[in-house]
Amino acid sequence: AGETDLWRELMWLHKERDIRFRRDIAKLETMPLTKGNAAHMLMTSMGVKGWVMQRIFKGSQRYALRQAVYLKLFSDDSTVHERLSGNELLGFLSRIRELTGGEE
Image (tube, rainbow, N blue to C red):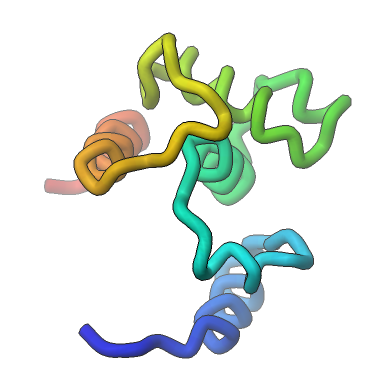
């Protein structure tokens, strides 16, 4: 692993996968990942339908996290500003894979 070109990767994801990012995404590079942020990125990138409050409060990490808890991606006691540890991130990604029917 080496240093990555964040802008090049973001542009590729936007152009090739039509993933839209917040305008201040570059500031997040040095910040710890929170459960609210991870849930919001997942729900947005996967185009998850059904979380009604997202339509009302666009960009709400709170409601994205609620949906992720409902989908059993996070525990019931998760909070928006709670930092995501490495083990939790791996578990989160594993549950997403199960939810989406990812290949072995």
